[in-house]
Length: 442
Image (cartoon, rainbow, N blue to C red; front, side, top):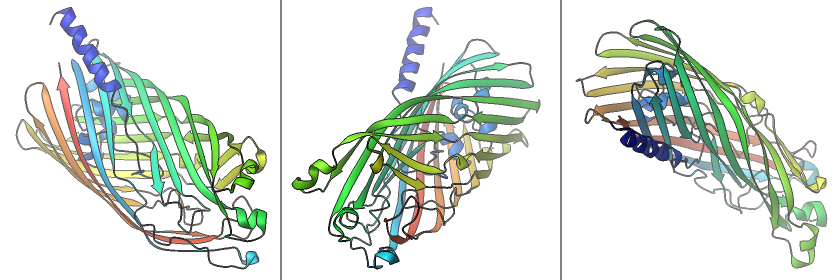
């Protein structure tokens, strides 16, 4: 290949990765994590992906050292369609007992609060030589959208929650010896968010609960950075152990708050003004195992820990401190366990399957309607086909079983959430994931 042709292919590949900024939507793993960054990995419920079990560059998101398995130049583009349902089964809301305990009027059945989504991701790896690899990835690792509509009865606790992240990671790996490869990268992350809720202005200012609602919309964005580290160990040929760590990324989302619903005579009481909110994405540590039983059959496993206990509160600071708000979260660390297998039907066709358990991050005592999440159980199947010597296509399907979820909040007019009312909600949820991936090698 001529130097000019090589440069053209490299620029084309990098451009393909750079424009694949993900469309993040409702969170599909514990908390607000988006695990769907590899279709070949999804086919085995992400079992062994930390050890490069899926066999392509998309594993670099989970462990940068797996780039050491790539030869030549490789470009991977993925797209995962998500059909998610989270339906409010029944809901009730009342004011605090000291305010009379009267029912809060509004929509008790807002329907499906989730949104379907398309999540793309892109990867590029260039082999400087057999030992040194350079890479670039574009992903949306964190995201959340829930929307109940302005009129629902829990509007004082939240209406719309929208978080989107765009993560770009230049990465390098190096094979120290035939057994050990190490890797690392820098996360360059953009985050933007919107939070909406209503306030009972009638109760707080007019002495008439429910007489006047005021809606607030807080928007903000920020750039942050972090890092990834990983190691890949192959003690014997066909058996690999992967270790990886993804650091937290600190954001101070800066924007503004605006208010709607005030009569003209009172509009000057709540002018739009500056707002800030701190957001720290959790750090993640994982270990993966891949073992080839024979030349056709392989088994794999993964365990992932996510430090969700960093998320203790949701605090929004307003230029006027009297308008600042605080929601206590008290999330817990979570674990994700997966087991999978792959079978080479022919030299071109590989089938995969896997199961997983994804622990929820918040107990019912602190569960809020912004993130009404629960434990999840994964069942996945997938297939990969080598179309030509340089093109491979993978497809996968996962069904995520979500047990019935509840939110039960009590307002005793003390603490950060005083005056928002008592709220009881039950949800019925399910998630279906359909993914398609293409790998190009040069």
